[in-house]
Length: 385
Ligand SMILES: [Zn+2]
Image (cartoon, rainbow, N blue to C red; front, side, top):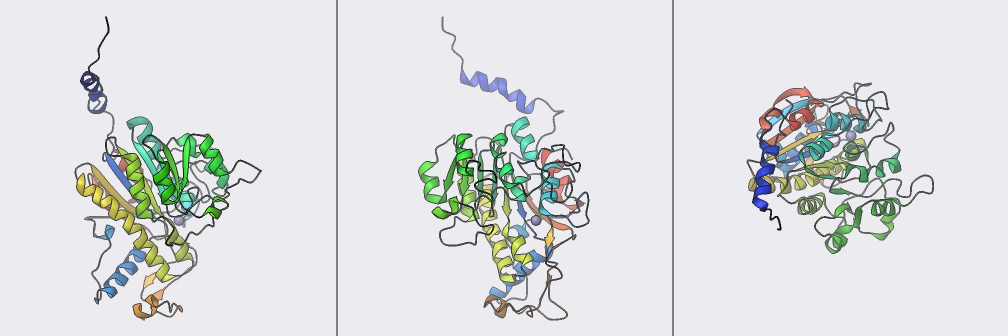
């Protein structure tokens, strides 16, 4: 006699595993988006809103998608060994809830003990699918904090080789730093393809190669020469896949049947701020906001099950809207006449220790009001507080 198993019966057996254990903390939402604007302090957001208001002929009041979110909070950003953090220590604090030293990624301050990102918890303990996106290389500090472990963020190739261990479903970025590895290693593409990932360069390749079930590493730059060492800084061009398009691809891969978590970094905001490039900073924040719009449209379709959180790892440049009593001169700035005397103040070419803003909308977004530490973010998302 053949034993027939009704699929509905199997489903009924599985349900208690999800809803039955009331003692197990529940993640904040079925679908979680976390955006990190690298170097995007509250003043960066304010300067961008001022530019948007200028475009509308107003003194102020225009908002980005995320700055119009109903929930606003503030997070402290200091690292284990410094008042002013770098991206890897802040990324690790946000991802794992553990403060570490500047320069370290995915390890505790002893430089040895691995700390896991909450994305790993969500995947292993709750079956979440995971996407990790950035406008800069996939092995750069912020995305690396969600899957990598190294006492030095500069060991780029070693960090790339940790991608397969994560088992995450989608990675996106502008390329790889140390594409070929420092010791005659396999090219990153070869290594990843041998370890279960399909690596695609540009939108056409994604559309040609993607099939459901494939794990994808997507490089936004389709240009052949970028199979070699990708420049650190991929400027937005006609051929470069935008962060918003990358988000659409990621959502296609993740689907909406199973729960998911997506981290998406606006990585070049930091670089523009290091260079005191006001329009570059504004455009890179708008670039990330376009990806946030894609997430927001998803939220509108699943409002009860979706949470979007937007924050930063630290502030860069010490920017101010107004400088020594001078008002911003948007006409000149927008025309590219950025001569440093245009009413935008910068106090440093490095990072600052300013706290960072947190914007949120959706399920359990109320947890993100108030003033807390960046290490609290992962606990809020995991439902531990
Ligand atoms: Zn940073």
